[in-house]
Amino acid sequence: MTILRAEELTKTFTIGDRAINVLDKVSISVDPEEFLVIKGSSGSGKTTLLTLLSGLDRPSGGRVFIEDQDITDMPEDTLAAFRNQDIGYVFQSFHLVPGLTAQENIMFPAELGGDKDAREKADRLMGRVGLGHRSHNFSHQLSGGEKQRVAICRALVNAPKIIFADEPTGNLDSENGRAILDLLLQAKQESRTTLVLVTHSPEVAARADRIVTLVDGRIEYGGG
Image 1 (cartoon, helix red, strand yellow):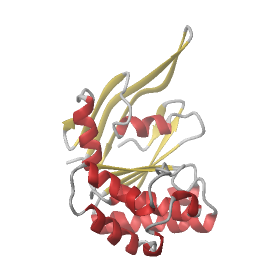
Image 2 (image 1 turned 60 degrees about the horizontal axis):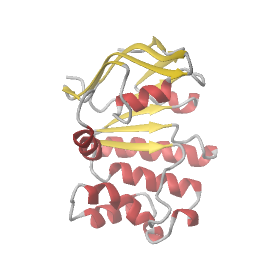
Image 3 (image 1 turned 90 degrees about the vertical axis):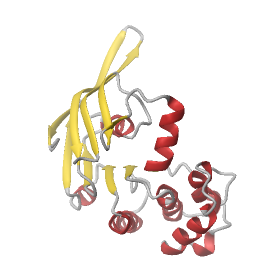
Image 4 (image 1 turned 180 degrees about the vertical axis):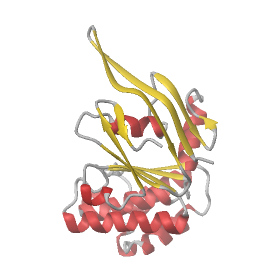
């Protein structure tokens, strides 16, 4: 059984009188615990595909299924709760909340779900990634690599079924980039989760189980 399936996803944006097709009938399936990389040049539609697969945006056409549950037309409040519990996100620009400490940023998704063990889970994750001493630091007090580790912990705190990562090493130097990828893959293995990652890096893509390449909004190969 696939954990993630998309059928003929289309995304069209209207600018003035022009309709721009960013994705054109993209179909893809992902197996449980797979590490899938989505590659493509700038403007190929890879980030748009990631936002549709993860439920952060809705397609103009087509369907998205997670564990055979159709999330395409799910009511927004139901979808928000589903995303918070079953999906983790890691972004290139970290997206940490400035007014929260590292610990509080990690706790946030768990607290939204009413988890009374949110603080304990956050502390445990921070210890695993070597950030126990940074619990009470705010984001402006952290390095880029530390911010991304906090973001990964936040993505993992609810033990999601799928982690979506958009260029997670893009704002980091090569050493920190390798460390972050190692951490993601270690977390994937330990939590037995699925990882769907957008990248332009050949080094990152080389470690994937499968690569999907987008060209002008269509899958050139690897759709599965």
